[in-house]
Image 1 (tube, one colour):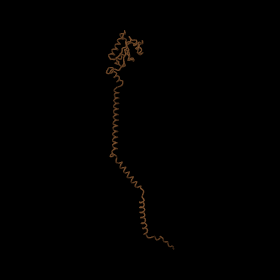
Image 2: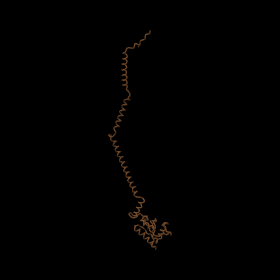
Image 3: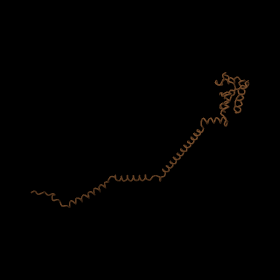
Image 4: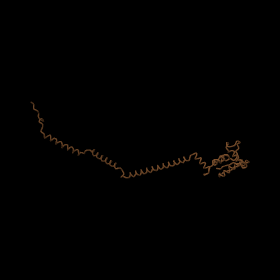
Length: 228
């Protein structure tokens, strides 16, 4: 960006000459690059300056006087506004340029930023944000490690038969024995066992008959009663 300073090299006004010298001298002291454009010897410069100065910045007669300052095509101001910016240590802001680091204007701009935005609060928020992100990431990492350790222990337990609970084996064995016993009770009786059972019943029946045969017959049995 080039700072353009429109001035009149052959002006008969001492006041205008002094103002022009003050502006150029201060720009040189600040080491600001600028291009002096003479309106006295160049009609194009004079017409361009008059056309691009905003209407509200022109004097009542409509003819702006030098020096007039521009940043490329953007209007910065005249001598009065330049002087005010100089008194406020805001020449770079007036010119639309960033102040050099460490300059008085840069320090003033930093102070103004502090007053408007409160860097302590912003700094605190940023620090808290960073700390919270660190804590969250640390917590996530710890949880991942615990999950991995739990999975490893579970896999080791599955591979090691000695760690399996013996209670389940005993319960399974008892269930098998109960099923076997139940199966034995439910088996059908074979023909041989049935015959043996019938023979035992027949052997028991004659003994009962013999007992009755050894007894004296009843006198009434088979004898017709006398009729008188």
